Amino acid sequence: MTSNPPKSKIAAALLCFFLGVFGIHRFYLGYTGLGIAQLLTCGGCGIWSLVDFVLILTGGLKDSEGRDLEGS
Image (cartoon, rainbow, N blue to C red; front, side, top):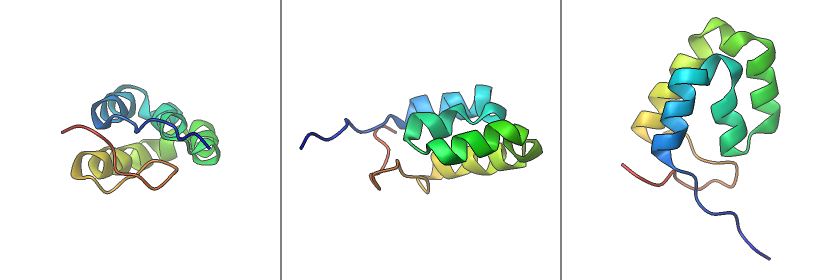
């Protein structure tokens, strides 16, 4: 069984900052269902995206396999 490589914290943060209202960072992290929900709600009117951005920067958001994001 092969494992996907770890996701980058910097890439996730940039995707969230610039495209967070579309949920692109959630698709990147492997959360397809949450990505669709953010896409349909415009990132919870921006609030959900802001919370995710803070979680990414503080290390509170992991990828869909439960691994910490790589990078500083």
